[in-house]
Length: 116
Length: 115
Image 1 (cartoon, rainbow over the protein chains, first blue to last red):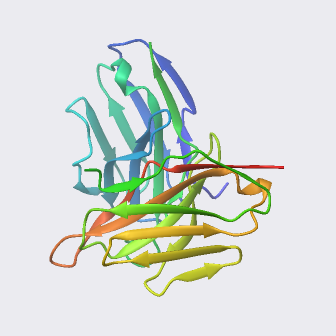
Image 2 (image 1 turned 180 degrees about the vertical axis):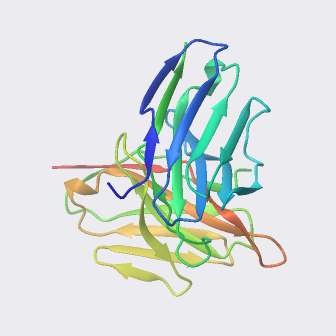
């Protein structure tokens, strides 16, 4: 398909374990975003990439969270030593350019993380 | 104060009703505004942009009041398929007129349209 692809779609893990979430953006999209959405809540910004660089990491909740993007394409969000409050749907989105013009983000279906 | 605030609802309306959602934002330098729609357990999708002069797309009308830092979405002749969460979204700019490069989402307003 031509959309944003995320994996895994569902992840159940034990508290204290590390998890990696993957995002494959739409081909050619230079901007990539990670948000998370907890039950009944809005989208919380985590980090965004323009190419391989991350101009804004201000949304990462703690130093247990990190993200990287290589080759201007695939991105990985890593959560170390997971806590129960990390349980949420992690949404990745991409955009073909900076957002000023269109405001359109193309979202993946998300990775649902449950920390027991 | 949250950067983008919405009435979470839920709004329960009959088919054919007109319903309006409101949203306020805190950053007066914000330049771009949007409404997204999110169906249950699905990803958000862009519904429409919001322009200063107000804009219409079929049954949907979006308006912006910069002085009051207020955005609205009006849905006329509601359909069952309009049931969803509507997210108010702001592209915030700094005082120098440069975008922060990210979209800030409100918590969403839940709409349920019933027969």
